[in-house]
Length: 137
Image (cartoon, rainbow, N blue to C red; front, side, top):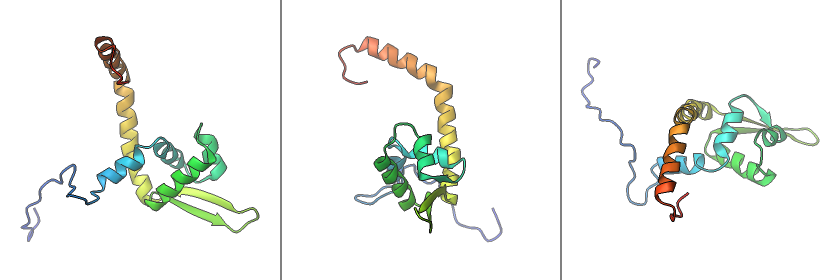
């Protein structure tokens, strides 16, 4: 503890929501839990991309869904959008500093899923065999 530092620090709770107040984690989970955002962030971690480059890099994403996804990420401050005054206009997307700070967490989740993939599949098979009438899948 530094000289003059008298405050006691306590760990931040995982969820610090109060009634009716956006606590941050819910919004982040909503954004990163959608089908496309993490894939777009991973692609933009490689560098600046134009819209069509992003669309080609994220198989299955429609033009409309990509537009919504990058706009939501832009709104959250994770992506910046630059429009160049050309005909037709060229638009570049890139991660902001905040967006880049998220990539190590995504990498950690990807590593965890790779390391535990077989165990999860085995567990699902066992559970499904024990619960054949369940609608949970």
